[in-house]
Length: 359
Image (cartoon, rainbow, N blue to C red; front, side, top):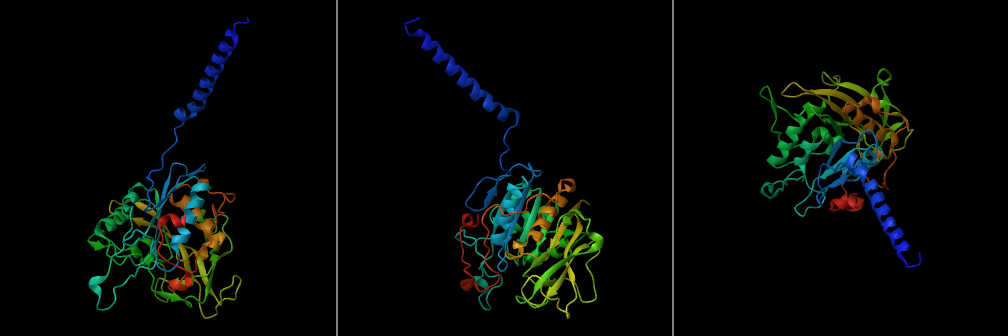
């Protein structure tokens, strides 16, 4: 036909075909809906939607509020690895100042004679601990409001797993509103020991992590090797003592002379446990899996062995041992250049910053 109607019919068919294709593209969304991140986005914290991986559908909350070891650097890094390479939804909460800035310079003790001027710490978003399947802590000597302390105590008594890093074993100055059999519970009770002193030379030694041969088959140690870090070994029990009952040591920390990997053992310092597990019994009798690692700084986590241990520990804590693989990635999901540990904030370049600056 020459009246122009045939092209019009063809165009109509093309439009119908395009609509059908569009509907077909949307069909998987109806059959397999995209799961929303369990925590809303906010300038007060960071959220990392999980990609594809064994952790899909699980939510990890990482809490960074320490003043020395640059948790503000390494916790977002760990969240990036766990979300991008392993599929976990992750949320990073920070200790912030009155302006809402992540503030590692916040003092932990009031100045003598100025106790009334001391400002307590604050971690926005602790209510989201209730939505976590696992929590990772990098906190130190916090004085928190009652509602935030209660959110932590509720999580600790939930029976859900916990990973505690470095200073988390003395993470609170405020007493937790948590009792079992009439006895006040502190964070050291939960993780299996609290900091007593530095077993080595603070900011001068380094530590080699030696896997205990009898424990090398533990899921958290799958594919882990060459553990080393710039932090010194912590003593968490009296000389001649041992870890509390119920703790199982996985890695011994040997103090080294100097700050280089491969350095000589310090002959005056015996190795002490730096990684162990325990089950925390809650008020209801539940047993929460706990992994405590007294290594853990921004520089320590440049060591891939330590990163793998924490990633494996996440799977173990969640009862997902069968998903642990030596082939899984613990490579950085984005650029990682942590600042050095310490309290000389001006020299180190540590200043209060918005949470978004640490993504």
